[in-house]
Length: 153
Image (cartoon, rainbow, N blue to C red):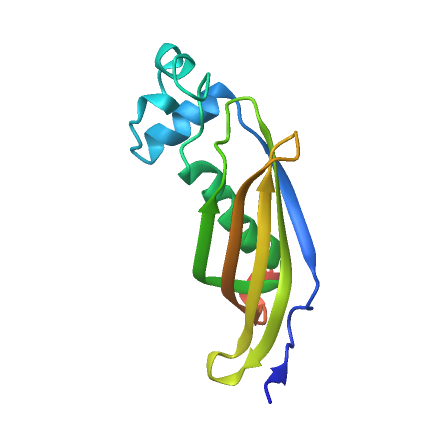
């Protein structure tokens, strides 16, 4: 029998939104060295099957993954271990993305001094279309106790 989770709660759900401006699509693709013209060239992208600029797949998935660290670091110390992302549809420039994760399993792993947490999530656009389906396993540990240096001004 596995020990119950100590840090997170099964069923915990959290999310965030992201507006994809054309400039953010171009800038992000440049930062990750994705030089596909579908992310940079308005005229090229307009003639494609997408009808306009689309985000590099790394853009919504990076924000989706980062949401785990952002959320859990508010009260714990998270560490990403495994991510499985299925790209279902393109994210278009000017889309507003909604990311949502849900804790589906969690149990205490004494050898790692934290909870092993399994999550499922989706990224949807403003029309409700599912763009990304994700599964993740992360380690969530209690935050270390603050030292005296951290509490002095």
